Length: 227
Image (tube, rainbow, N blue to C red; front, side):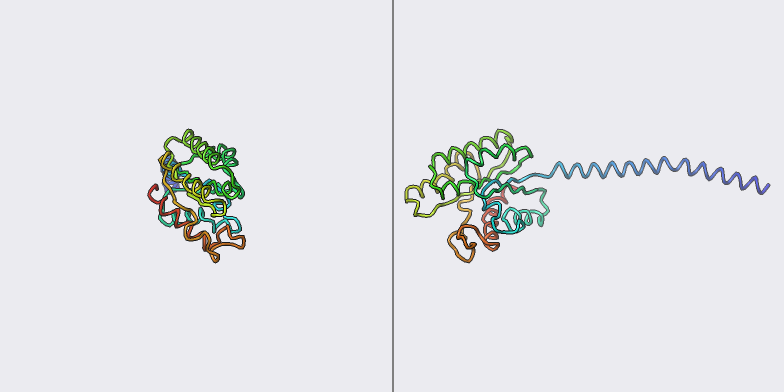
């Protein structure tokens, strides 16, 4: 009798366990589905900011973490904003080079586009009209690919030894382009850094790590309103 009772309890236990397992599996599946959904939602909310420019954006002579786009990413992360910064800077890049390169970078979604090109054109004394045409072509391609993109233009200046008229035309090119294309404008990317020896590397052109911190602030003042 005792043996039969024990066997009965054993069978009952197996029934309970076998009935319980599908429920546990279902709960686990639901948990995994919920996690996947949350991860997908985060990925969907994530937005990209593309900084497209010269060695100033690339962070020439600096550790990549010291370049101003990386500092912008740090600021964004500290504020827990869903933005990913893409550094599309290239040393020596001209507006013509940028026009040839932009389509490749537009293969990834761009929500905010920060254009920092023209400085190398100015240092080489290239015609302002041609630089303007190239920058406009880049802007047009970005808008065509991503109609809802928010755009920022970083203004630059050239030394007066390039000639007063050239320097003036070059400086005015940026606000004119920004106004025409309804872009936010950083009046002068190198404000408070350009011409300050202690904030520039030995070449007198590229900012030091301390200089790039100021560049990041110059950018953030304008960029923050678009986030």
